[in-house]
Image (cartoon, rainbow, N blue to C red; front, side, top):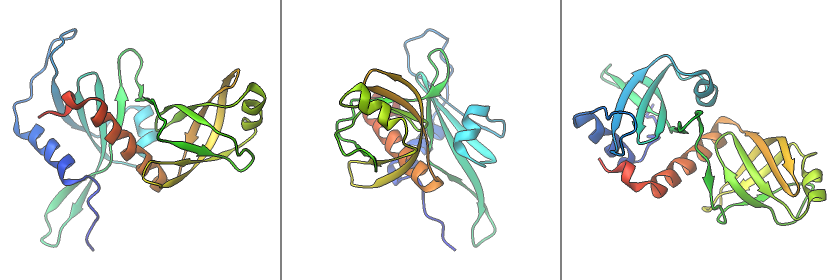
Length: 204
């Protein structure tokens, strides 16, 4: 059975180029960009919980970010082992490590079964989001919800489970979880936006 290629040809080409070039380590504090790649079976607890049951992980360090790729080893029809890279989790590590947060999200929309007003997405990562609602009362009402629907720019609808963590006036911060398919779609969207926001990091 043929497996679907999870990364696009352009994305695979970029990482292939990284493998082909000489990898250098830049001293801490340097402004120069560096690329470092390693394969590991020891994944930090935070990343392991995001990547599911991945047994191997490709770690690519670009600038101040770490890209964790779940990696599976599959057999082709000739019995050769082939690595299959999944969609990366982008982690920033200036200070504490955390999933990269995307801001300026006018292209996204959020809906909820109990609320039909406008919801502005202030920030989004694969683990959480910050929402701006009309007023504090509406934010308090939204806290009672357990599910929301996130619509991506291409029209895809992602059902997300939501756990509110704090509220400041009409701003509500939540943790989010999703099924594997929706989680992969969200991670791909964030990865693509990270590449658009930081093109210099992805110049091989």
